[in-house]
Length: 67
Image (tube, rainbow, N blue to C red):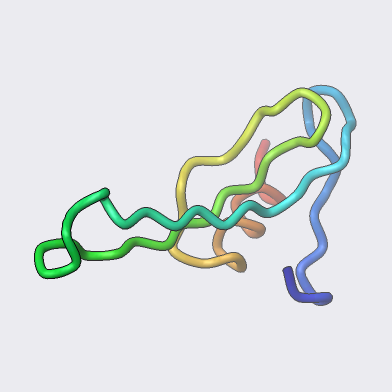
């Protein structure tokens, strides 16, 4: 995570949040597969998380803008 992406604490338990990078190759042979990279923000304490986003900044913005 870049230094400029600051995450608010968890809205449910107050725990520290982290950005997770998820790489998926679909488990298919290289000729047929397309790789996907996703990012979520999750609480280190209770595990609540955002849905999948295409980059870190979008995931962080959604985490920080929750109601």
